[in-house]
Image 1 (tube, rainbow, N blue to C red):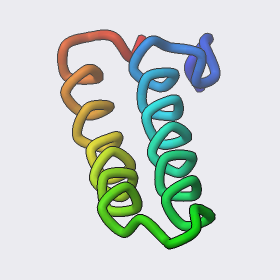
Image 2: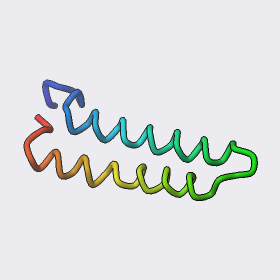
Image 3: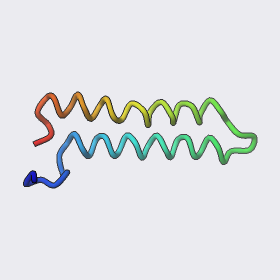
Image 4: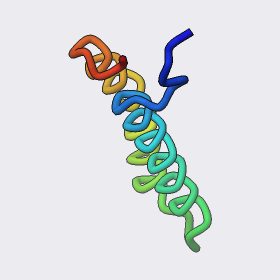
Length: 63
């Protein structure tokens, strides 16, 4: 197992982007009326978290 146990820049960036995406999407859903544009922006940010993590890991920021 890695000595960092997930505490790497790539892991932190992926988690933070995922959380920000969920918050954006959640805010879009609780607005009255529901803001579907904001919801889909949150979905896109959340989905982009995985490729950003993968690219950063390939760049060596995962060790």
